[in-house]
Amino acid sequence: MALITYLTRIQFDFGAVKLAADELKLLGVQRPLVVTDRGIVRAGLLAKLVEALGRSGETTTFQDTPENPTEAASRAAVAVYRAANCDGIVAIGGGSSLDLAKAVRLLATHDGPLSGYAMVNGGVARIRRDVAPLMAIPTTAGTGSEVGRGAVMITEDGRKLGVVSPFLIPNVAICDPELTLGLPAGLTAGTGLDAIAHCVETFLSPSVNPPADAIALDGLARAWHHVERAVRDGHDREARWQMMMAAMEGAMAFQKGLGAIHALSHPLGALAGLKLHHGTLNAVVMPAVLRFNKPAIAEKSARLAAAMGLPAAGDATETVAAAVASLNARLGLPRGLGAMGVPAGALAEIASAATADHCHATNPRAASAGDYVKMLEAAY
Image 1 (cartoon, one colour):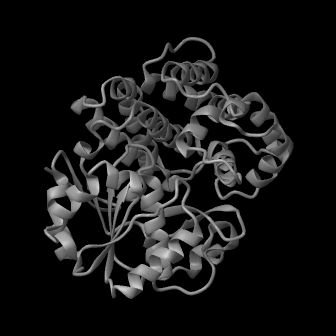
Image 2: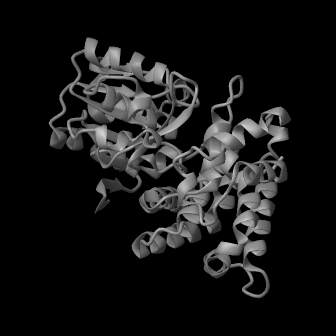
């Protein structure tokens, strides 16, 4: 078992979930609220956690996490937390459950609408350290939310906003690749491309953070060389271990900042009436964003290509963009936003929202609303 102390306390290896009870004791949590979703319950993973906690019928749970977490769901979970007199939170699931749990830990001790704590609204400074304790247990290898400082939430006004603070990083992460064995191929692909997008975009961010760059390149190499194996064989233990490590590294690195890929995927994910997977959106828009950023990323693209094992000669940015598009096709991901059901009439609105997203400012090349429209059209 590997204990990694970096940003937070991380237990990483097959079987790590068995340490959950001991880690809760270290946190001083006696009455946890378990935040999860119905899919995790059906897959038997909640039962596995409850067994590891040794709590059986005593466990208080919130199982209604939406595919894209909402402020309404977080408030419903807070009501359960308070009614049961809980003193901490355990999140188990994909990025949606983990992000929802971060909103719950915040609203358990902070008043006001969630939008008041959004990064774009100056909310970082309003988040105090007295949030509820949180243990995060990922069951996908994509978001890396178990070590991330942010939660991306659909607020009451319908916007998809990032709530970001170092105080939101979970107190402990239990990273057990065994929990991802047998994850469906489509979800493995979408979450795997999410991890790749994090590593690519944070490396390209113009912010100065060489340690984050090194972590991003290492995560990219792991994900790029193992995602197809994980999709092809859901029980490939080596591939699952590598993908969970890559996802975690992507989130460790994106403390540096992201860019236009995420500035677009956030408002796309908030489109009413659609339930669009965040990682899949990142995959679909990534080639177009890379091509837009080309004038600002030529040197870095060569380093990306090297980490991915791609040919070094020629236009490195185009090589990387084409390789991502080819990987998307091999993994069976949608051919474009149109195939995902995004209405063409919404592109201008999405582009405008992207300019207000918290990831917009750290894109390597300045982008206008018109530039975002062109990227969306190229990804359509």
